[in-house]
Image 1 (cartoon, rainbow, N blue to C red):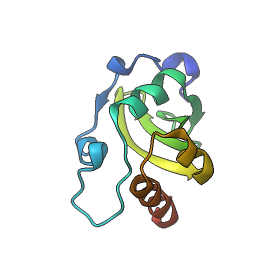
Image 2 (tube, helix red, strand yellow):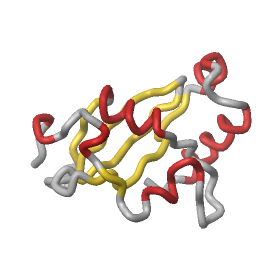
Image 3 (cartoon, rainbow, N blue to C red):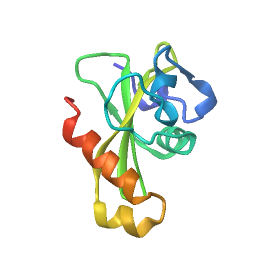
Image 4 (spheres, rainbow, N blue to C red):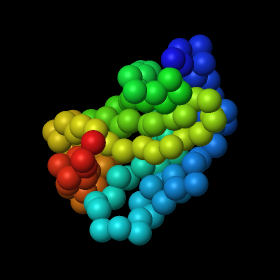
Length: 119
């Protein structure tokens, strides 16, 4: 199993998976609500986020960090040094509104994404 020592805290240590750019900056082929994932979130998850391990895999690590009331999970394959995906997992709507980081539309998109995400 990967340990915290196996997980570099420098964003440049990782490259995006082939499908990751589709999730970045809200570029989607499907009709799911946008994730509002951006470079600040990716870098913040890697440099500051809590590290959790996927119990079913020895090489998958989740970085988790909160940005303006929205908590994101960034999934990384540490063996491949690859960012697999990223998505919001929870939102404190009041904190998100107060933060000034999110528009009302973004907050609603994130709430819809979380409500419809099968994970």
